Length: 338
Image 1 (tube, helix red, strand yellow):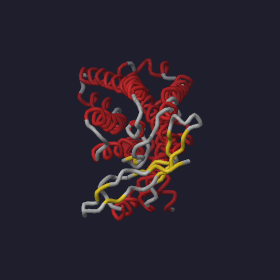
Image 2 (cartoon, one colour; image 1 turned 120 degrees about the vertical axis):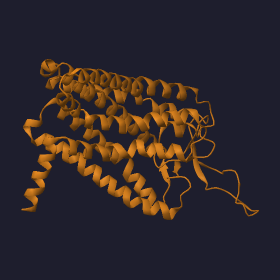
Image 3 (cartoon, one colour; image 1 turned 180 degrees about the vertical axis):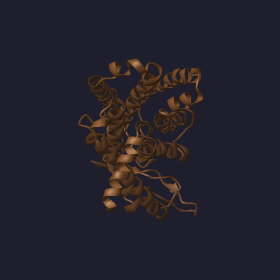
Image 4 (tube, helix red, strand yellow; image 1 turned 90 degrees about the vertical axis):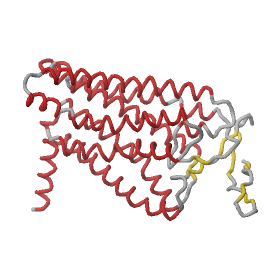
């Protein structure tokens, strides 16, 4: 192990001071240099005091996301009448959100509360893999839920025969497998790079594009593979989701009764909110990363919205919009008050 000394930085007072020393590990063949850890910034431009106070709403968000998603999973598990494709897919979505929030929020809250920025190199790569893989799984489940709404509204008589229990189970397995296979290479193509420049990640968590930017070697493979994955997974999913809603909207507008049209489209509102909360920040983050230069405050805000908002918003939206889940929650609270 050796220590990498960063360049001196002018403090603005006519003096220069070095940045924090970061231990660096060379691979056995001594051709690659990997840091022992990365340094997480949190939110650039905010001091330790502001970070400290931000930890409390973040902890509240984590508790809210955990309780909300766990409640949805348990309610669907206990209520036999909710053992239908749309609710089973919702339970899968809540499970993914539950794991995703646990991967990101506790470490972020710890960073804000304690100010400890270090995250081990391999731990950072593991967190990065889980974030991207779980996001791909969530994208697949949102696509499956859009397909469920399409069949239910456009071909209602075929819904029970098309989306059966085994079919939904296969969809869940396919989402899990696809997320794992597509993003499993990411840690390995990051390990083939040398990191001999700054090791500061300008986020509160590890993302592929940000770690890649810290390398001082050729990142062509990472850029090409990252672009391929984002287009072939989230890009394709978002296109099919949009196409499904175009077909749904066309059928809804063709209904003769305005009441029937509103009732049909009302069944899609919860899922449409979840789609917008997930895909709008994701697409915005991808565009910002490819059109702008180094990681900026805009990147960080978009990434935080993309990762932190869906696990919190989804259970609230589905709990408020889904009559069966809402009535079950109210029943639980009424029993508790008695």
